[in-house]
Length: 432
Image 1: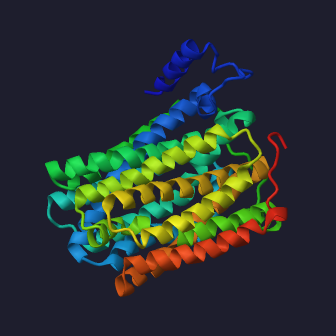
Image 2: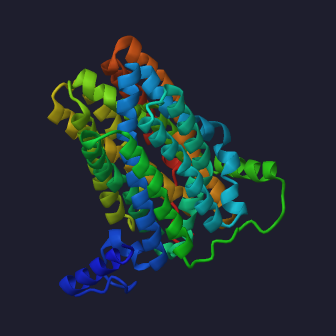
Image 3: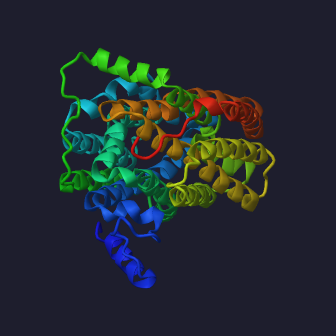
């Protein structure tokens, strides 16, 4: 499967007359530049299969929890349980990406990640599933992500040339968003065909793909921290560097704002489609798919302009657009209108997060990159529990439309603040 991208690149060579494997090609397709690298192709395929399994489970999990509890707040609490470990331990455990062999870390994370979904599958088959089990599995997954995400993302820098990094990051992120398109469709089919246990089983098995990819990568993935220091000093160094560097600090605050006010609806999607749009499982799957389609379109756009010095402008535009879409969603009652808005929110969110990821990696030095990525991850998942719980409560108390209105208004105000921070958002040149 890892050879598929290479074959596609060869076909494009025949059609365009340009060699995509030639760095100097003037007509090189930006989004495929990173796929020239063998190790990157393995990482891409492994991540795609793993994320597809996770997307399958997410749809089934939301459906089961909503059917069992009927509570928007309890639905949000599952997402909260996954994010809480990142809030408390993300920057601390993220140090592992700089201290240990990334290959071994990623394989270990994949093995541990399979335990929770397989346990849920067995519990569904034996009719012993309970709400607390979803909370426990989510918490375990969040704990593992504290190490897995900065490890996997820092591997990207090790398997591509620096000049391809700006294209590699959105191309790698496409794995998650392609999975968000395909996974819900697969989940809907499995739910119609049988038990949610099949969805949990599929996710449990999917982690083996990324573990295999890690072993197949030939790049040197040994630790870059050569000196021995206490973990607390390494963590402090990552914090201090992020908040003292003006660009990183501003990017962190803008990203955290989007995480709190702009992404809460994903944890309530089953409730939104049922209560606001009057849809069932297929409607939930379609809504998730639309988010994925929009996110993929956003990534293609990001990758296509990756060589242009407009990254900080993209961050601000994406944040503003997302805020306006949330306000519009508060008024949406027709499924097709909501689907379009979900696609736009997917595009805005992924463009903001992905471009921020690129900027953070370009600004940070190699010996701090894993820790800076963990701060990027903390800005997304570490503070997001505030929004998940807050808007879960607001939705249950005042209704889902009110949640969209409050979140959209707050995010719009913070986006306006972002537009005033031009002097603190300095875009580095490739190779700086």
